[in-house]
Amino acid sequence: MLIRPPSDIPSSAITPREIYDDRRRFLKAAGFGIVSGAAIAGGLRPAMADAAPQRQKIGPYTKTRFGAEEKLTSYDDVTSYNNFYEFGTSKTEPAMEAHTLVTRPWMVSIEGEVKRRKQISIEDLYKLAPLEERIYRMRCVEGWSMVIPWVGFPLAELIKWAEPTGNARFVEFISLADQTMMPGTRSQILDWPYTEGLRMDEATNPLALMAVGLYGEVLPNQNGAPLRLVTPWKYGFKGIKSIVKLRFTDKMPVSSWMKANPAEYGFYANVNPEVDHPRWSQATERRIGTGLFSKRVKTLMFNGYAEQVAQLYAGMDLRKYF
Ligand SMILES: Nc1nc2c(c(=O)[nH]1)N[C@H]1C(S)=C(S)[C@@H](COP(=O)(O)O)O[C@H]1N2
Ligand SMILES: [Mo]
Image (cartoon, rainbow, N blue to C red; front, side, top):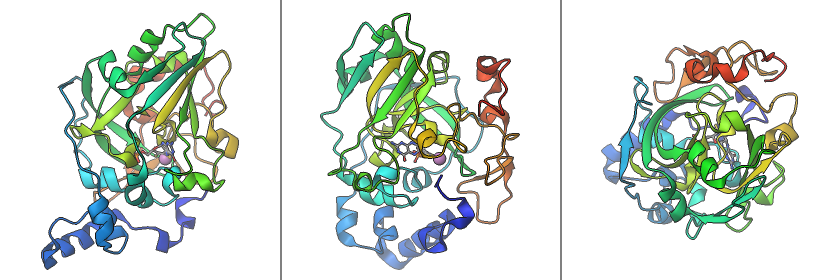
């Protein structure tokens, strides 16, 4: 993913969505019926298909004004083309491997510069605020994008509940790093646990969502169950998955990707077609699911959410604060 430019990834490690979909269609036509993505990508191991977790409806939730006009990326693409290094560095591994993640019981620890330094259960988090659907365009730093109907609640509601002190200027987010449930954490590809951060005004922006579901269903493990961050104006790596801790601080947190490669991954990670990644252009993107030879589309400033977030960065040199 972020370690290598897309062109350096051996073709053996890639299953382009379009080829995958063709295989799926072929398998259906051949009478295999509904076969899970895991089974296909793993070479049709029936045991894996059996282990595929049950899909579970989420609700109730409301639809809001946060809906993109664009065509949604298919459920299959959203849930089988993932980045989740705790389950491997390829796009297909998370869907195959993340069934080992146990998401109940699940506690989230609230720490640092807040009045409520507490553990809160995922059940209580669901009760903090009404769930909403938000259709967001998502842009990975690698150059691909999706349109995903998330279900969640504003991060601002969780922050309000936590009651930050006057010293809280940033929020640090920390993922689970369990070597038994997450095979990827047994190798040092990143400095585990995966961590991310937001400035407080970014975190309380109405766009920042704590997602617990997608497509009207409970978040699949590979998408970061049971709780993940979604900040659609930033590159995908800000959207930290399977969160177990929020720490409020007065200092800018150092995220896992900043630690791994500070020249390539900055704290802000705002989508910006004018600031290239040192190893590739960020001017255009490939919308997943639109065909292998479909034209790349122009990437928009702040991923098209400038109206909502540009004021957060007024006066900042976005080449320096990338
Ligand atoms: N804990 C954790 N969170 C993570 C990642 C990861 O490897 N580990 N990958 C990030 C990256 S690079 C992207 S693009 C998005 C992908 O989210 P999706 O698979 O739900 O589309 O998750 C982000 N959150
Ligand atoms: Mo990404």
